[in-house]
Image (cartoon, rainbow, N blue to C red; front, side):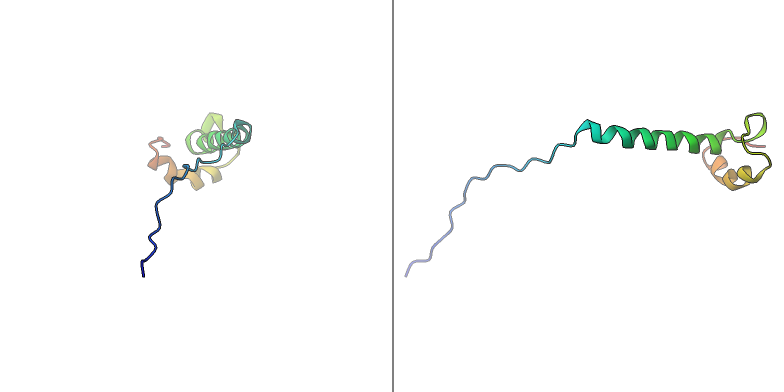
Length: 73
């Protein structure tokens, strides 16, 4: 009795689904604006450019400020 051996078959490669640019742009804009706001609060929210009175924001971002190389005192 002979055993049946499966022969390899040619398959077409599977391509990844295309993501339309119109689906990416709103998310890229949202995260870009979010990063700019965070950069402002970490890098410039103190002194003459302060939007929030008091030192609360400065104290919250103080360590991140030094970690990223921004001088603050």
